[in-house]
Structure formats: structure tokens, C-alpha cells
Length: 295
Image (cartoon, rainbow, N blue to C red; front, side, top):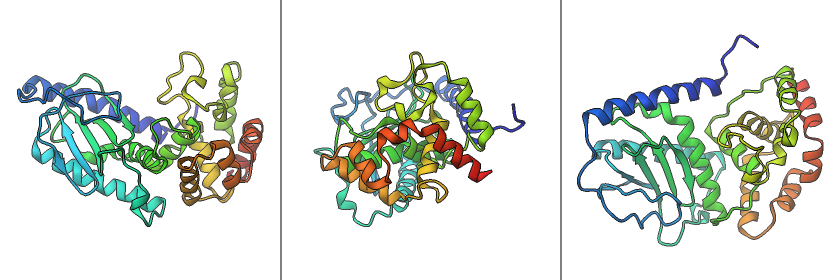
């Protein structure tokens, strides 16, 4: 095992340490407010139906809800999310915000700060994002990767204008990891060969292109992070001049195709110059060639 700690490990260890500690400090000292709204019908396009304290804060791109965050925290999160979403728009060189398709009745992103619910969560749905931040004094920069990851998902959903999305899971997660800043857990040919060897006997052989839908993950796999390093590697290959040499603009055009009813497989071949079937079949050979060039 190499004597280095990857960015991925550092980020998640930090957050796993941070969230329980903040949760303990905040919840032991304070109690949830008594004025919680009993209906959460405002969160129509999410399976999560949490209540909020009835005092949302509105910023340029979002409306901040919470079960207990104070006005200052909501304002800080609003400014922070606006900044991060602007970075995502710049990444895709979006010139016309009118092509963002918000759910009916929405014109901004609903962002829910989870202060008191037990779940630690970072999740995006069409028109909404949930993020656990236990302390009003939290340094939001520690959440940079998580917010940008989820906001990249949100960007995709708003372009595709869909509740049931047509983009393959490996691609959707790959671009969200890239938008978050990347992980670089697989940095060279040795890392890649270690991944291949350690997944050779499981369903799919560790090939991320086989993860078209959530049910394609191997049994008992942690679907939130199990394939993240190879999802990340795949998106780097797509966008690197040593790989396919494509751009985020090509990805935006794919999302637009999905919105217009084009299948993911057809759009992928049009914009990336290789069939999805061929990409899946040749995946490890292509990645070996790519890693060899980088070495």
C-alpha cells in the first residue's frame, strides 16, 4: 500500500469526524424550535418530507430552509450556495439560464439545512438539495466538495427537466465528482491494476460502465461511494486531452439531448465518438492506455 492518503480519504474522514462532533455540541445544548411547520408540501419532488421552522431565506439561486438554523446561518449558506452554483454554471459555460427547467411551481433551488434530524445527508433531487450541517458556526468551506457535487447533480436535473432521469449512473456520478473538484483516488497504472485485481471476482468485475442504473451495483455494495474512484477516473478520461479530449460543453449537450428525448446511449455515441457497448467492453484496456500515457 502506498504511503499516501488520497484526497478522497481526507475529505470523507474529515466530514465523518466533523458531523458527529458538531451534532453532539449543538443538540446537547439546544433543543429543536417549537415553531416547526407541520406540512412539508413545498418539497414536492423529493422523497424526503422533513418539516422546517417557517423562516426560509431567499438568495439569488436558492431558498434556504431548515429545521433549526438561525437567520445568520441561512444567509451564509445562501451566499455560499450561490457562489458554488455560479462556479458550476461557469464550468459548463452556460450562457442562458432560461434553459434550466425548474419543477412546476419552482423558480429557485430549495436547499434544506439538516440541523436536528438524525440522518447525516448530502443529496440532490429535482429542484432540491439536502445537506447536514450541525453547527451554526461551521466552516462552510469544509463542505466545498459536497455542495459542488450535489449542485452538479442539480444542474443536470435542471437541464434534463425530468424526475426519472435517463443518464447512466456512472456518468451522472462521474460528472458530479468532477464538478466537486475530483478525487484522484486512482492516479497511476498500479492503482488501476490494484482496482481490477480486487474486483475481478465480483458482479461486473468492477467495470463502472456496467453501472447503468442503481440496481446494477453489486449486492451489498455501498452505492454512495463504492465506485467513486473509477467513476472519477472515467470522467477524467472523457475530459482529458490524453483521453477522449471532450469538454463540459459536450456533457451539457448530452443533458440537453436527454431533455429532448434522445437515449443516453445514442447521445453518448454522438458526442463522445464511441458506442456505449464498445466503451463498456474495452473499458479496462482504454484505462490502461490512458494511465500509461500519464505515467
